[in-house]
Image (cartoon, rainbow, N blue to C red):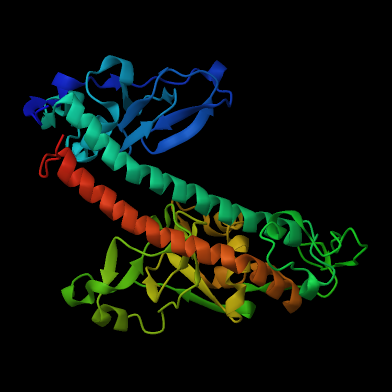
Length: 413
């Protein structure tokens, strides 16, 4: 079969259907995903589109593209494409749409959005159906690997999260932490609290009044301020007017870089060594926990290498480097507290360095913290390895989309 390509308008091969408002009477959580322009936002009891399909952001996150393999409900901030009403391969069409700069087709309305008529007039080049399927299959192989890695990362983090909750919220930690681990048993982290399966609380461990918002806590534990367990570092943005400050040497981390990551291994912007030198003592070593404290409050991530951040992020360089995992999970509980500290009647939340330093943390004994680290460290090392693989897989996938979907490189049928 010939690898034939033809030039058409987007509207010749697909229609962009308007999403639908969710009826108030049906706003009940169900199993069908609800999509807005920022992705899946909820679940619903009834699917509006009863097949797999594509979602295109038309308001808000204009031009965003999502693929849903199950029936779904597109709300009125998006367009949707129904598999049953097109004659192109749906997955190929999804990859093709990702190569188009639809966000540039904003309407002139008071509320900017994707102009449907202009979008349908966009000129594209597509191959015959068989070639579409072949291209989609090749790229989907990498998409599947990326999705599987995301699931593994989530499981590894959730296992450690469960142990954190069990030990430091429920106080069901081992009576003898130094003897609690069963080496070689990977299931210990998810189903044990000690050699005899009895934790501190279930064994009658004594709780004492802390005199703080934490109330009753295990004997020997303390309540401290963040500044007492480490050094708080607030980031800074080097002058944009000095071009030499920016390059490819040092990660310059901003809150959007946190999205979907535990460890930050890549950033949208990087500094040169010259720019990094302007940061004075603001450089962060690997495995430093960062928290967003201006704008979007309470996002949390960890450095993977020597890095720096902008001023919207406060980081804690713990006195004991092994405490980074414990602090990571504690930091993930701070969102509501940060919103309270950072409201001040302003539109944008802002938690100052001094307020962040004064946040109190429940601080277990060294033996308990050390044992928690020994149990969970392999999980986080595995997450770091998987996220490194993700970057390579995403780069390959995106390169294939750029070249195969647009016909820059032809495949042999």
